[in-house]
Amino acid sequence: MPGSENLIKRFVYSSPETITCCCIPFTNRRYPCGVRWIEHSLELLVGFNYPSVSLEDQSKIYACAATAGSAAWSAMSIAVGLACAGTLGAGCFAAVIAAIPVGNETLKATFFQCLRNAGLSEEIISQCNIGIYTRQT
Image (cartoon, rainbow, N blue to C red; front, side, top):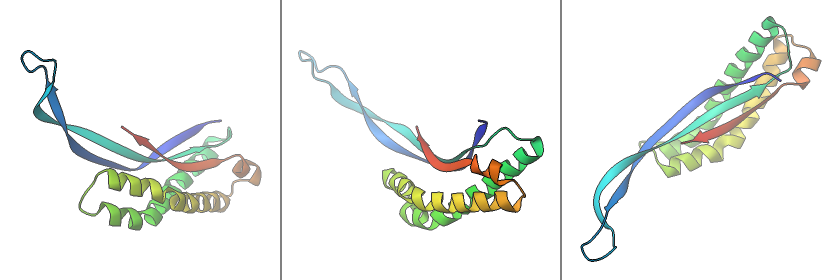
């Protein structure tokens, strides 16, 4: 089945990591000798798939997925915004992940209602699937 993904939001923060050097003379012990910054990112994505359909129906499905992704982010943004206000970090990433069930509920309801409003058949709609997931680097 064909499918695609849309990026809803990308969160990025940097954290310090101690650099260790080798070695203290006459020992094999490493010692701290500097700091480097490590970038962490979390992407919030909408993934969807659908059956083989005409280009017209495919464009309707893509449009509905984009609309549903925006609605899902609106539902999630309050909880995520409070946790991430002014600072990013591991706590923000945890808040994003914790908000996914709320976003998924809104996403699915909006997506399937949009498909119905676009005039797609129930046969096509029943073969479509959509969900929110994360990718961390």
